[in-house]
Image 1 (tube, rainbow, N blue to C red):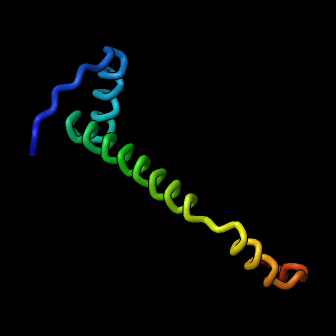
Image 2: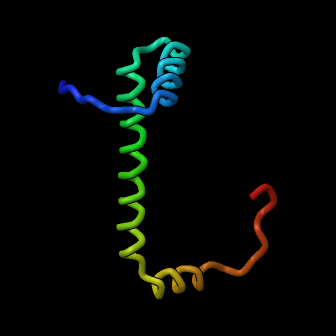
Image 3: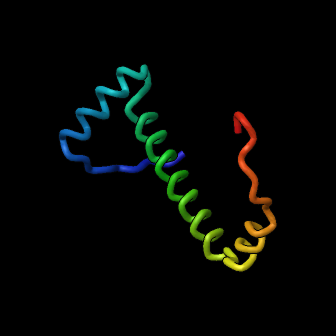
Amino acid sequence: MSTLSVRLPDSIHRNARLYAEREGTSLNQLVATALAEKLAALAAEDYIRKRAERADDDAFEAALAAVPDVPAAEGD
């Protein structure tokens, strides 16, 4: 495990301490969890962007054309 020193505005520090207390966890754990969540969101954006770059509009249109034009089943 490594140590990271971070400068925070007083208001963010105060709120972080408040929510850590409410969650029954340490400030360090709250910050680590918040950072992990943000990193996961950024990684998901990267993944989606890369998938979108590989998209093939012609293949998508062909797949849509293969779907029958019928009303949706009840409850669908």
